[in-house]
Length: 382
Ligand code: GLN
Image 1 (cartoon, rainbow, N blue to C red):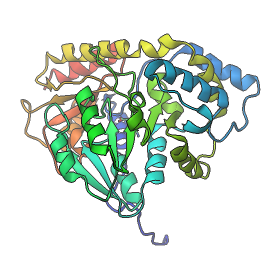
Image 2: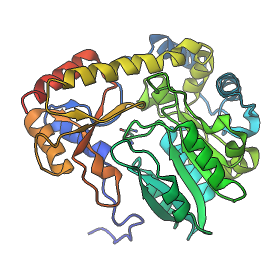
Image 3: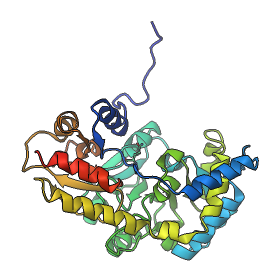
């Protein structure tokens, strides 16, 4: 018999991404659930990692990240967002975006603090807030365009509000922040001590010629922000688990105190390779077009089915309304779809703590054309 352990997360089970991916394998289903590309990443980037290993770059690099990689990130940010960052003090390489978010929230939050979270929300946000003894203050995004009701945000802000979590392009809905959203956010945080946690892992996955309103573009927002990024989403290698966080020096110094005892330093050959590959701007600048084509293909194919698209302007994802097919709950339907029809998706309800069931499933379109076609062949039968 094993010893009893008191759970830090008593109401939490295994993440839906792992559950649905396992179910997809078990039932030989096409996996449009968990967000990852099924097509090959750049051969050149793989070769650069091999070369870095063969050259002997296999020991720890600096705990905050390979200096050259941080410099190259700073150059990229200067050219894309016109922000001058000190790579020594304001950029830290992390093992992925989720880790950056975890570390940033742990840096910011004290027990009893309130954190504003828009629902639906990426599934790590709320458990991370709760593990820090803080309180998630939940605000629903407005169905069906998932825009922010800023009047409601103003009502929910209190003297205990410590951080607002922002995610654009948004997982799971594909909504993106507008200039008006930025202005509203600026007005709300002005003259307060509120921090911003900005999850921008889909920065390049933005469609329809919309601009990405990064916190890096707005000095008054950046001065209070931790901004989190993922190379996995940029270079189609989610399994590499490598990303970075950006914050003003004083905030980053606290972030690094936590980071040094958790991950300490990230995979070194990958950092050498990324430092070199970052110089090829096209590799990230063309990503939005590539992924938009996939969104459009899925949308065109899905016209043959009873699923109805909601608007997606970014990310890997598009939500589809299935209310013409069945009245089943999102979870039940997603499971049946995997088991009986061989297509795995994610029920949008799992991104809510407040019970919500709009009869919409999240589809990941970051897949080969053949995968999307094969999936829709199966969905036509419904
Ligand atoms: N971000 C990815 C998604 O939303 C998955 C991340 C994960 O599996 N933890 O599908």
